[in-house]
Length: 403
Image (cartoon, rainbow, N blue to C red; front, side, top):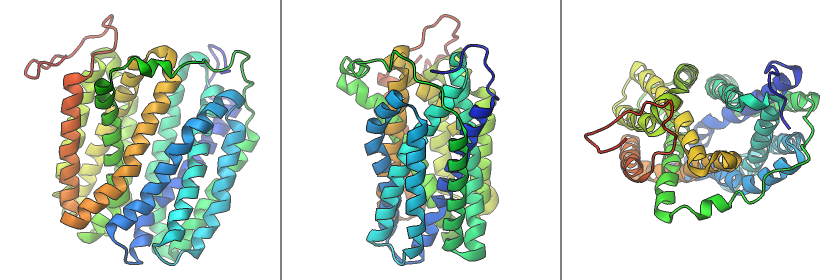
């Protein structure tokens, strides 16, 4: 049960849970530069993508099971369970000497810990916020993740330069310990007597399969493309003589944060599809721009533009899926969106790694842009308008026949 109407965000327990999520995300985001460590062993790019992608695949596989348990029993105990698993797994990265089975196994176990702890910590934070301001609670939680997304790779780059992979692993352990302390100190709101609503999955049975495939493909492609940017941007930059990529993650996250604060509600005023289309076009065109990067300034420009597109697409697309399944199935819609996004990240890493093996990084980003354009065109043509038009001023695209 969440706090009642009028309760403040900035209470002790919400802040403790929020910092717990931030430190947890910091520990995980340090590993965004793990491909740099793996590359020193001389594996194929496809092998690097496989090791990085198995992390997301495992997180996706266990999330529905633990998500149901979190609804029933609360997030705190499962947040602790996931963090403890990550604390147990991370020291074993010190034993990695090649890009073989050990890093793949450790990444899979880390994906299990992340899948449990991330979902549980977000649930815990949202329970501790005001019940009538859930969207704002989720936005604040998302900003904590974006800040960690910016700072983690920047710190990881300095750690790898200053002391190698060992310092990266040790720093991750420190952040995990801080997350554990915060979650232990936070008090959880008691469960409501009514329990989670039953039968939420029935909402999916009424959706035509073609329509479901078209709508579901969009977050999958966005996840795949986000994975290609996160997992390969460091090695791509290194291949063209750009030694530092930390600033790329900083400007990406700053643009996404600023966009979410100032334009996060634009789809409420203009309609979901009216925002999804230009946001997807921005991201796709930016991928073509990344394929032309040959200097750090242009790399930073693409980072900012990519963050702008991400800041626009996330609230519009996630809310579209909530509207599509119905507000009574909000939890199902949020978990479905995140799962589809993670499916994209998990599958996209090895697929785009394979493409880069065949044709190079520049063509990898061009293919990613083309795939996003195709999936967006299908979405705009087949996906229905979902929001009620009261108070909404739809934007029209008469040249496409789309509202």
